[in-house]
Length: 292
Length: 86
Image 1 (cartoon, each protein chain N blue to C red):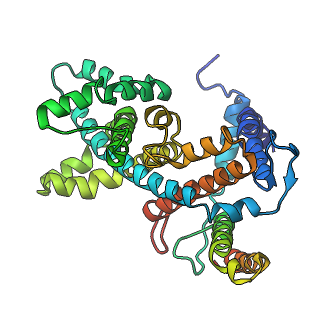
Image 2: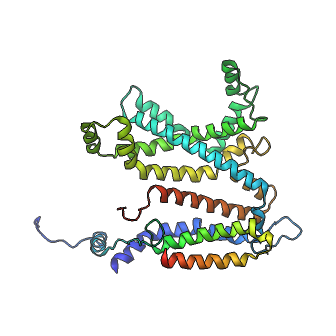
Image 3: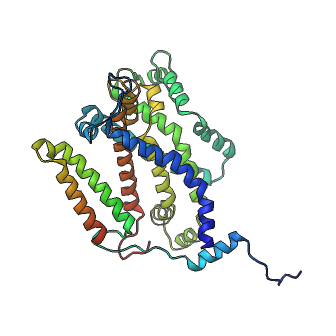
């Protein structure tokens, strides 16, 4: 009994903080999502409307389009980050001149606030004054205009996210790679396994938990991207980069449609949890007849 | 004071020892689901399916005139089956 009491005592601060800043706001958002609530309308009170907000969400063409754009954005951003992050982590495992300096430089984007990243990338990609359109035009004859081309705007948001968050993937994968025991690799080399076989049959299964945790973190972050994209493209051109986070922001703040915005938030949370759970189940969950 | 002297363990050490002696690893169960699950996993899967069913119902079935309460009834039945036999 004593151990239980002591355990709960140690857990209490964390549980309290999680409850205050995680569970309570979620319950409130869930509560609001079942109401029609616009504090600046003629009737500023919350009016319970059952599931009408959810009923409206599934028919909202703009929301469904933003969901599609978000899925594409998350897929390209996270896959690219994991691939580049893995190769960078492998590079940092070896020795080369200036390794410590390069590792520090490469980690710097992580400490920049997303709103600043968005501003800097906007400056860099604005036609006529930005360095990137200028160089692309000079070197390859390409016309990059994120104000008029949906594909260019989408690509730049993905590249910006990759630039900002790949260092996180690299750092977690370095930690995973450093902690791997040397024995299985030596045994595989003695048995004549090639680099590709070692990667697929030893490295990847052994770093899978860290890799999946990293993908979870990036997936959740990418699904709720708002500030960077809002600063860079404002969701445009048209609604090409109006990802769900931006869509919720525009629904809640300019239009003060809190009930509907809450319903969308709950659905996005639901989708995030489902995607993460499917990923976990597919890659790590113990199957029947196999040891976990 | 000798090295062999028995000392009273600190509360944290005592708690760790007691936990190590009494801890039981929760075991998953094998029902008709393809993965090993405990009751919370099955409850979670039930809620996920219930929400998915309701959203699908709103979009495609309710316009045909069938009430959302039917989806809720199916969701509850599905949850009971999953939690008991999943």
